[in-house]
Image (cartoon, rainbow, N blue to C red):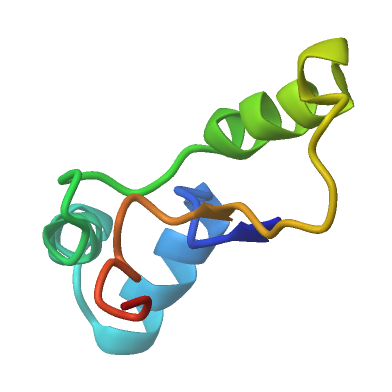
Length: 77
């Protein structure tokens, strides 16, 4: 599993403090970089983890699931 950035308040606060901007400005800029228009939430990652731990994923082997809101859409041909 490859999780992209998630909207963790501490991360946004640190970025804002380091750049002299507001948390809202940092969040808006970050969200604009994702095709889905938002930063991932910890629950987005947790949902995939729960699925992978479930019986419904019992036939999955040797894969990497990228959880990044589509930001790596151009990486794979």
